[in-house]
Length: 156
Image (cartoon, rainbow, N blue to C red; front, top):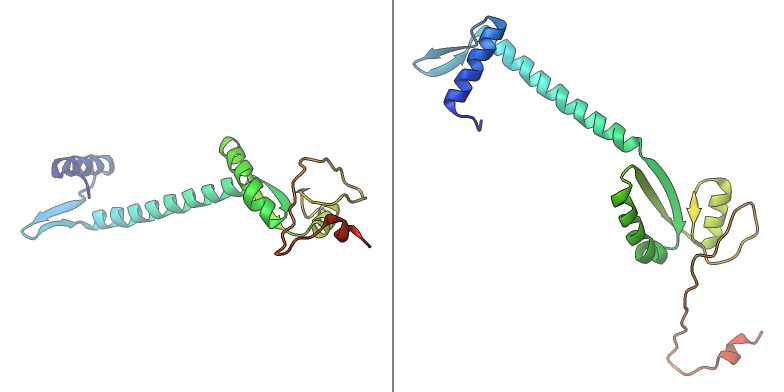
């Protein structure tokens, strides 16, 4: 029980005085609970269970009360850009949670218009009832096994 015998004896005596009862009897077999002691032990277990359950419920309530911001972006952008940014942000703002959705730009545009996503990082410029700001210009590379000319690719 991680308590010394003298400390346990003193605590039992304190409880006995508080309730004006005898909790244990010393026998040749050791210590046995009295009827009152058995009742206190059961009630103590119930109390511990209630306190544990209450703590879990309070932690869940606290987690449920956090603001959730739904962010949509491509899988690559979520994994390699947003994850580091959001990690640092949540260290300083622990009452905010993020839900990330991986989708294509056209689907994310529709989800923002429908209110299913709060913020989206997309590649194209869409016309509609949204506010758009350019946040980054990224490089793109073309890979081939054989040489090509860009002019040949641009022909219709």
